[in-house]
Image (cartoon, rainbow, N blue to C red; front, side, top):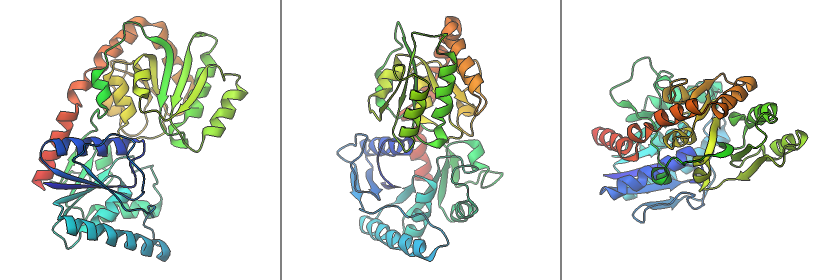
Length: 361
């Protein structure tokens, strides 16, 4: 097959990692793969030499009812359409809800099939009236649709259509497969994600501050970059925790640090299917996660392979961290059970589900 992916860019992030990993897998199994990005930046994640990365060299403009935005979007759509017709792609996959809109418009009246995806929480993520309408509108015109969770699929219809499929994220980070559970964990609490409001690292910092005296040898590291860096740094300083909480930025090797940690925490208000949580669980790191819509409750069985807490509840996050650190038997149980994700969500298993689906469209 000639398979194309459409995504805003290939910077660090969950959809970006999924795109690069799926592209690599498909190309290694005999398919021609093109990744089309709006922005002219190199991929943060390694790409197989057989994968072609086309940079269109312009910023994404979301569709809306504004004439200026509509004309801007049409200009970009026509450029994408020209490319897919020239390359004679069999299928184009929009790797977010906004990329799905462009995918549908660019492939109409061509031989290229359009695949939409919902990679976040459609009930909450950019859920303005306009966006919700456009999500549902363009969903109807896709040749196929991929959801990460059952709940996300129900945003569009109560019953999954024959053309649609639920495929969870794989553990796409190949480094995870080479790391073993350490004999001795470091006194470290880790988190990974964009430094934005959705991830609620402010609450995580407060949770750590509330138990810092009880775990005086522990440190916290939050990997990621974003618009709230200054605000979070000021918060850490106000709590006099500069020496114990660090924000080292984005690091492609962060997974190696997470692997050695006592606890991994996902404190988000909402998620799609969080890659970072999956990776930590697959490595056997005892995990705490909010019960945020949507992915965590489809990954974690509470107190069996992880601990679930209520969204925004600083006290529950703090207590869950403390329970893991102070109860080695619980930590070992969570670790052993979470490792099962290496089998159920492997790159091979999930990528094959994608290929079977694409070949059925």
